[in-house]
Amino acid sequence: MGQQKKDVIFKSIVITLCVSLIVIIIMALLIQRWITRLITLAPYVATEISNGNLDNHIVINSQDEIGNLLRALDRMQANICIANEKLTQQMHEQKFKLRKVVE
Image (cartoon, rainbow, N blue to C red; front, side, top):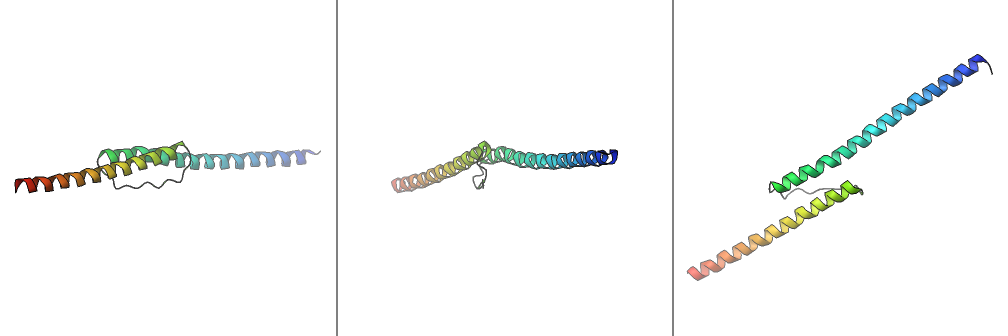
C-alpha cells in the first residue's frame, strides 16, 4: 500500500472519529437537558403544592423513575385538592347547621 493510500485512510479515520465525537457530544447534551428539565420540574411542583397552588396539572410522558416521581406528585396534588374540597363542603354544612341552631 502506498503512502498516499495510508494518508487517505488515516484522514478518513480521523474525520470519522471527529464526526462521531461531535454526534456523541450533541446527544449527551440533549439527554442532559431532558433529564435536567424533568428533575427541576419535581421541586417546582412540590413548592407550588406547599404554597397551596393545587391547580397545576403535570403532563408526564416519561416512564422512568423521574416520571414515577412526577406522577406521584400529580396524584398527591389531586388527592389534596379532593380532600380540600371535602373539607370545604363539610365546613359549609356545619355553618348551615349552626345557623339553623342559632335561629
